[in-house]
Length: 139
Image 1 (cartoon, one colour):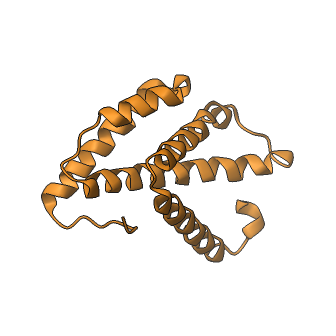
Image 2 (cartoon, helix red, strand yellow):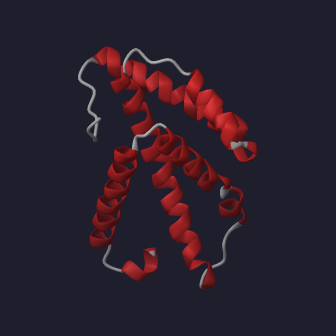
Image 3 (cartoon, one colour):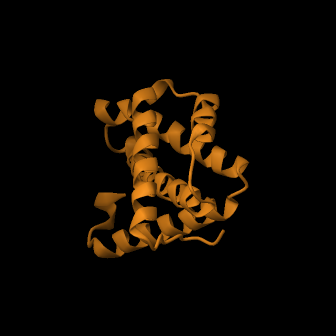
């Protein structure tokens, strides 16, 4: 599969959105108690009308989780200088979700998706850095 995937038909976009919502709901429900085996069983129980919709769903879920995980990670790297807030520490389990979804994608053999999201995050980060005049304030 070639990434990024852009779904053409409205029907495919709706199917992808419903799948993403189901996965997001599952992740929120499990929260910090999620185990990799539970995620794998849930993900394997999902049905898709095509491989393209399945991969597009994984792409969107992983991009969102990775983006949130990166934001948390960047804030935590600065914890030597700045206090880590209780709210941020509460949210740390999201990073485990990123790891589990990445592991699931790797198990499915979709390593190109992992490469694509890593490149996407790099571009997003570089754009944000260049947009800020005071980089030290945001890193």
